[in-house]
Amino acid sequence: MHDTEDINVARRHLLISGALSATALTIPLSSLHAQDDPVAQTPAPATSRLTLHVNGETHELELDTRTTLLDALREHLHLTGTKKGCDHGQCGACTVIVDGQRINSCLTLAVMNEGMEITTIEGLGNKDQLHVMQAAFIRHDGYQCGYCTPGQICSAVSVLKEIRENIPSLATAELTAAPQVSVDEIRERMSGNICRCGAYSNIVDAILEVAGKTS
Image (cartoon, rainbow, N blue to C red):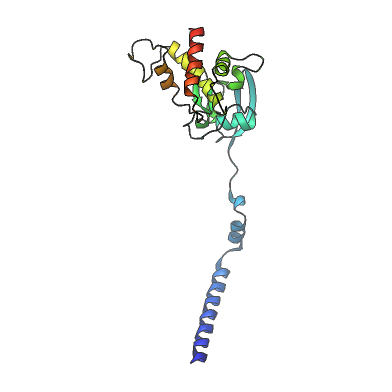
């Protein structure tokens, strides 16, 4: 009885081995090599030569066309003041100013901003000559860990510009009237910039101070 079972098991193993051998012979060697080296199948990324105007300087770059403006600034121009937070346009840490308007640099491609005037936190001021908004943030302790601060400051500068240009927000009482600098207006307009340390009240105070000086 056991001899018969052993013969059947051996026979099954033989059939399985034969089937696998036959399958292996039908697979082209080129396919095996391609599977061993998947990188060899990946086409080279498309690149583009472009000119970026950043903080008053001109930069000639050749970039993968999929490179975001954020990565171009940080990885290629080494302007690391602009921070990568969520990388989904939800936190505002990557805010920069392009042609006078604030944008999330993680949501735009570098090639889309060719020829435009780009201002990062490094272009607003430096340790020797601070921008008025930077100085106000320091006086009012508008930061704690500081990670979101560059985006907060760039956004704050744009917020006051929007109000001066009579651009309404959801907090504006009358859409046809000039918006007023108020806590509600500032909070609404800054709502796209997240501070995980919770320094919001100090940030608002800093912006109100600058508004009073520049109005």
